[in-house]
Length: 354
Length: 253
Image 1 (tube, rainbow over the protein chains, first blue to last red):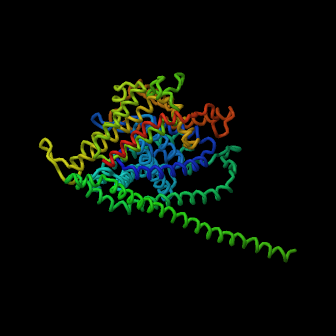
Image 2: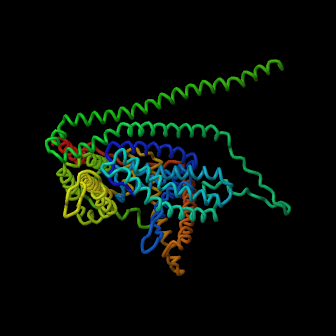
Image 3: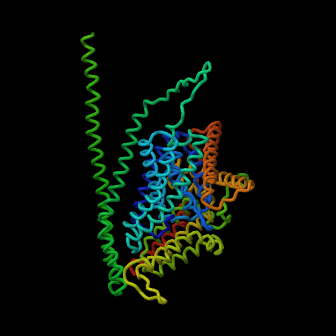
């Protein structure tokens, strides 16, 4: 499943690299919030675990065997931020050390296998847990569905990247059917293994499963032969509210930026794809045209297209930036007014008393 | 852990390529691969020149050709995919040995094979001439966030430990007569994975406590800063710059 060099063209590889870098930056902040200064050792060890568990072979039948990809497992066990980080680090090391997956395709690999898999699994898992009653069975069901969907979702994401920047002329429909078809099968295996693994962890250390913390039974103390709830250690909840809006804000911003970049790419790349097919056919049919196509003139043409794409992406990003600034300004003004009002009433009620 | 942290892919040596600072080598490799990927696929000769360039690097680094070729095997799954491409791609078709093949599919297959192979060969050379720790230092010098580098170094350091733990569990299972042969046995293997996760996570907590007790405050001290002189940068830049020249020739010729 690791994409090699040359499969996706250079501009889209770079764009995917930027998207992957943004996602990793957000996860670094998020993971630091989840794990504070324990981040490095814990995330490192979980990454080592994912690396090792990919070596665990699950025999299917007749000598064939598969292995876990671990995106959904990471999302459920350690949460989305740490999960994205761990899978990305595993992919980075596989690319640099083991030449598994191309260096220029690193961005594509991290976006598709790290971010899409983990985020899809996490959203589905949390969403299902919210709907289902909070029992262990629903954790199992939610984990199964999350892992099952996350794998074909990654395949679909790969097809989307391929549609924008693929270097071959295999028709899109065929790629989508083949990729999603195969990966639904892989997803079933992934889902079975993930569910069983999560179940095994919950049976021993339910507190370690990030996605099932709601299940943890409150601590009971036996006082004079009767069980009473232990007094909860009151954690500092106050700063969490402020942080969560920041989290929502950051996630929204990144999503908007990525969408703006990618959607505009896609919009302007569509005619380009047609041009590419036409050019390929022209090149095969007469050599003169190829000679002309290779001249600096054609180079400027290519540059123009590149600039158009770039300007499209830039326009999108600038648009998002302007919107965010304007929105933040409005939000800030409104919030100031609302926060002003209580103080005003307080002072007005305070004066009669005085 | 007692065997030092040299990884199996590293091949010790004293060649000029080994002596280059890691971040120069990383930048050169990335640049080279990027240039290769943006070369037009019709310039077949350009890929031959790239291969010659890599062969020259391997010769300077005294890496035997057999080693590079053996490690190229990692891309076999994608070779299978590339072989399929001429059969499923659309467009104009040609007859080759009685089979109807798509022209654009053939070009696509060639494109993926050539660029993919060159990319794999470049990273094989990088991994064979650079020590693991130096590689991580180089990534840090190239402004990868320090936290990410720390995570990567913990992963590499404890990868073997966790892998060995998995192996011991496998030995324990087999010594009790267990042999996984089908889907029926997935439950047992999944329990292995679960146990491995708990052990890894708890080891992480122990490692963290051990570090805190030695004064860890969230960042690792940099003991040996990797520095590169201008000459070393220039030496490392020979590979991507030559490749860029070839690439430009490929676009204009």
